[in-house]
Length: 146
Image (cartoon, rainbow, N blue to C red):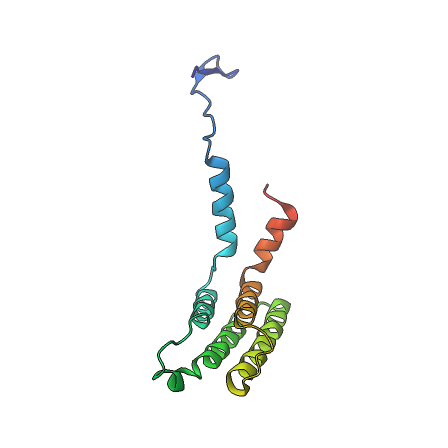
């Protein structure tokens, strides 16, 4: 590496640094993670509630006690969306979460499995993500990396 001449004062400056091989892919990965990960405590609590929905109780003695846990988690998710009010996005996210809650209550208490469980839980996840981080993701996709 040789020094680069500067037109200012006829001096030599420090050498130019070549970008590393992993610099581009790592910056893209960190950008995507910053866009997708929650930025506020309410969103983080909502994500944790949705992750808890995916777990099923295998113990037969605990099923009668924990049968109400999933609808309670759905109510917690809806209340967290309400606490994290973001204007029109909150109304859309509440609509998605309310539809998912209706299907969850139908499945839990009336044994009508209209939709698979994973689809209901994913709708809850998407409603939290839409309320919290969708604008950042939309800007990234629409305008690209700059």
